[in-house]
Image (cartoon, rainbow, N blue to C red; front, side):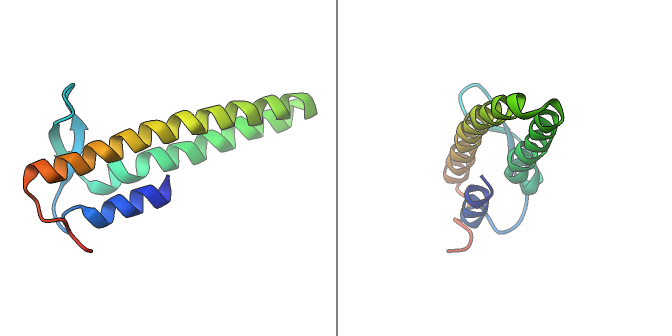
Length: 103
């Protein structure tokens, strides 16, 4: 997720705010800090990983496998959501007429 965020950042305008909220049609309707939208999901995943695996380790070896399975599923879902948001962000950049940023 972090690599995806960094790649998307390269395609955003080099300065200024970016879309941080999208309406039901996928149009950016609120601007804000780029790092909020780029890093919220990767940081959230790292925090949830720590909590899930820490709780599973404290519960014993059987729950450890369950915790790892839950974390794998959560990771897949969060990656899919992050990918969707990054695609919306790139679509916003194209429709806003902004320059593509760094190459």
